[in-house]
Length: 71
Image 1 (cartoon, helix red, strand yellow):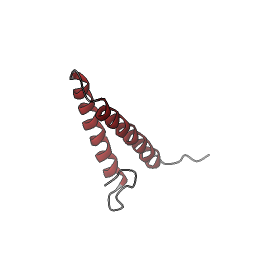
Image 2 (tube, rainbow, N blue to C red):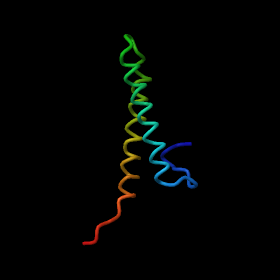
Image 3 (cartoon, rainbow, N blue to C red):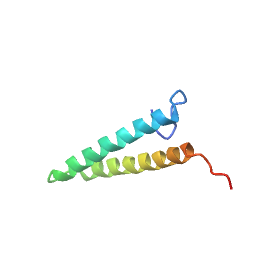
Image 4 (cartoon, helix red, strand yellow):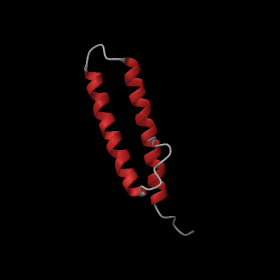
């Protein structure tokens, strides 16, 4: 399942938790890969790109969950 098209059956709060967990997991994987001398640059770039996609998706979901303030 792609996070660009969220699962309809999943509540926004549950989806947000899952995306944050995936972001944390990727963050740890990136740090681990960077610690290895001669790490695979392409794999690292893909992980970082995915992290950015997750961050954007998380930000969009968070803004949807914040109620609009009356003017």
